[in-house]
Length: 362
Picture 1 (cartoon, rainbow, N blue to C red):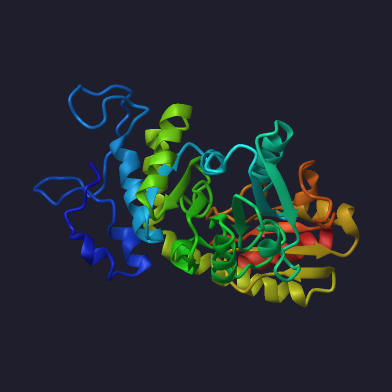
Picture 2 (picture 1 turned 45 degrees about the vertical axis):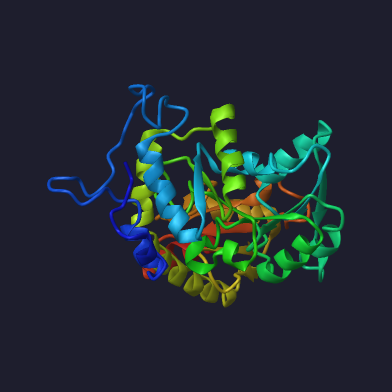
């Protein structure tokens, strides 16, 4: 079991970088492993707290303990980020209105739009660059869903201000913290009710595990999200949970290196003659740019790289990019030539050399 023998009050005094390393460890008994082992079990001997593989797994619990410590709440792990989003959306009442940025992860927006088509929810998509857009739309809403930075436009929202205003209007506040991670911001401390992550991305960090997580500060909401996982079968695999926990151990060093690369790459792109627009919020590992020449040039650039991988998703140790409008579900307000770059931990000179040659060939 992932039951650390460290006193819980110790966790409150530790930095996020340290918590990612020490939380979710087995008890320190002679010959115990340092890591919670993979437990590939569908069935347990009766009489304990687990009973059945859909109800719990020691390998999940390790990941949940780390994420709870990092975000300052109680965590529920899911099979994917979208499963975590679906569970969180289930907290909105039948027919309730959900406010969401018009530029948000297209899987999340697609989930909301599907619920709207079936009459389950009302969806209010807003332009978060307009002052007070989320707050104004929150009047009479059941939930306000925040991404900051947004995907892929990289718009930044004042979480504390928005959460305070939304909650006075009676709305549940959800923050997708996938891009920023708890190393940059901890939304529960800023007034959010629920934090969700695609753990597939920066948390696991090696492009080899699908997983999601929701973190809450209160027990009643935790119980609802945990019950959703049991009832809907949105359970992560033991191997994926193990890989995600292992990825968390190096989150701080990976993030620091990738963020430094992202800042430098944004600066280099700003000065390149073949680049029209660069967007970088000043933190994180994701940036976007638009090459001169429109969508055709963007396609050529992303397929001309030799080091950078042309692929969707983000948050791995390798740098990847793609033209986002190649996906039919991407909003038309996203520029047709926009390239989203997930910056990795390669040596920067090598990374820039490849990007520069791709721009030249594109």
